[in-house]
Length: 496
Image (cartoon, rainbow, N blue to C red):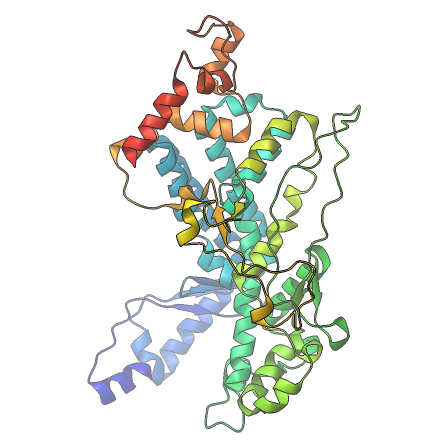
């Protein structure tokens, strides 16, 4: 029919050399489905054009626009094969690249993002195991390249910390390699919820539009999740329940109060380093409570979208904040929330052996520096960060919520590891040789530097003839005789 329409309307000849035919359900096996298909081609005149095409017949599943559709076992196997292709390419990158920063960027921006399309369109329970395997391979590749293989001598606490630091975002002192198993949860939930809301928006009877919900989701009452039978909608229900049960999300309701406009992003830092216990752990200060992420009820995705075209704006403005349903959280917002309560990052900090590592994590987290000068002559930045009008601290503002009553605060934000996301072309002076990359990697992890471990074990003395070389490189970077700090400073100035 499609070939006939294209020929009549556009005078185009559709040439499809091959197609696949999928028989859903468990009533037929592959042989029976293939025989039924051959008989249909032979006895139905309308199917004659398909007889010359090399049709593939399957009762298990098929791929549509890169998305696997079919029984769970077939979809799981399809995803495993795709993930295995990525894992093979990670091994090739390990073998070929000798520049540390290029190796990191290839893993983060190329291999770690390749499953993104699958995660948005494939139910999370079917792919979580494969995605977790890919995360483990990428972490192992980063640690191997960053330590020259000496990470196998690390303690389990040091390795858990390194895995966490690699996956934390830059503003929390990490390398920004978001675990695919985590981003896959938010990707599928955000895309599926957006589909339901979009169907509701374009299924309004008062609009001169096709009822897309009836066409795209026939037989589904999208306003009642309890009666959903379509696999995609059932998977959305499972993802919604997973976020509520394991990731400190709450479902919105008028009694729950207004939803926050954006979830705050906590800055990861070391716990209290005092009072280590006999078991090697420290009793840290209790962490600040994580603000729950408010999700709209699934029943409101379709209904609220249907009413968007006929809302009374004036009535909505008068509606209290606590009675307004929240907007759908974006994939980025959900991922940021998941990373603050990711199970593999729980209980990592606090061991006495990680005191140095935790200190580096704190130093490499984003730092906010107040830029308001106390006096006009206090800072050279006064021209760009002007001093606000003096305010009597004892005076009560007439209207604290008024913008004129608020004191404007200027800050300088510095994220020490954000440069790692720079994709500018590399120059010879900005390349990271393996020795340099291993020194940077191990030092940022608070781990011994491989090139210095042999010197530390042999108690090699520095050229200052006073101190021996330590495995962390502290003396090498600070010794005035060795002038490591001066050479590093001069190198940075030359690059800039």
